[in-house]
Length: 244
Ligand SMILES: [Zn+2]
Image (tube, rainbow, N blue to C red; front, side, top):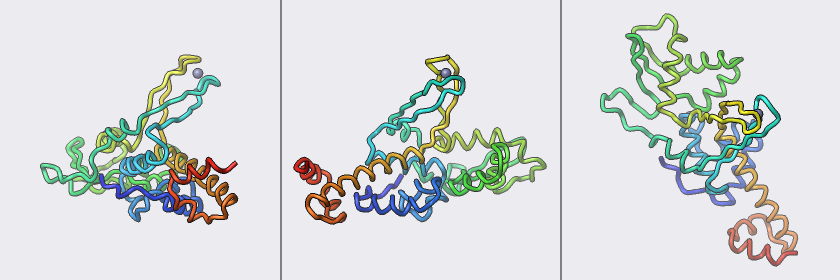
């Protein structure tokens, strides 16, 4: 996986500023600074975002979820390294059969049909979100990602369970579900981790802290934002210690 050099603090603040002008679902993508971000597999985007966010927020993903059956709040935490270890090495090389021309395209045998599919992208998820309920969204994704069927399918929806399983196997960070048991009432529940949202929140908190530091040093020394950010974290911290 190529991620390029980590963003500098100045670049991070600029990316955050541009992203705030976008709808919430698009904001994490802007942190990657890649034109093709919304056309990559969802799990590849998640892996890139985890890699970016861990630079700024440390190695833990923490989420708090509501128990569906009682007022208890359930905490779930992961090491970013463990999540990344589950990700495949993007991009894939073509498979040994030559069936897989790229990272996102693969074939699946299903009841005598040869299905050519690609993995969902953030752009697909946006389209699916406009399709209606969860079942309509699934059908929308299937239509978008089923590139060919030989022989043609009368009822593509019948292949959904196998197609979903095949996608999950190839893109394990595409959908990350965790099983939880409520310590209060014992109810077992399954929650989906929204990794891009976590990455955005981590970066958002980091940038707001940085801007608070800019504010204190600008007021104390008359420096510009660029000058304060240009100090780097260690010199900035040393100056902050001098400021009441
Ligand atoms: Zn509960």
